[in-house]
Image (cartoon, rainbow, N blue to C red; front, side, top):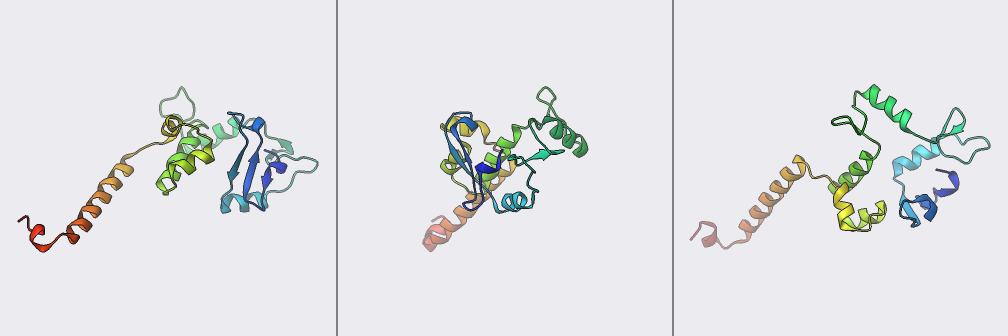
Length: 156
């Protein structure tokens, strides 16, 4: 990523068609936390790249990701059972956005998913989702019961 794509005034990263898999230009919103992180990064001397390692642009993050997983005790690798890979971050983003209450159409716009099938592929429903759904239904049923006339509440 290069600094000319980072628009801190409008809180977005502006991707050109050549930067995206589907060859569609996209504006990716930047969270307040990421804005602060970017502002705190030292600007590379004579280099437009945002992320540098030993003064040179990072071309591949796999080595850093593998080392970070080792330090954190997280299994790494596509061929490793329960192994983490970089692409898992996309699943995590989709799922966390959905859990935060962001509408699916907005998530799809941010991630560039053009079909519901692709959104579903990256959205993970877990036990917490199921538990929360049952609790919501219980709350709904309790509210509906409160609205019923007295004689219907007792089952008459």
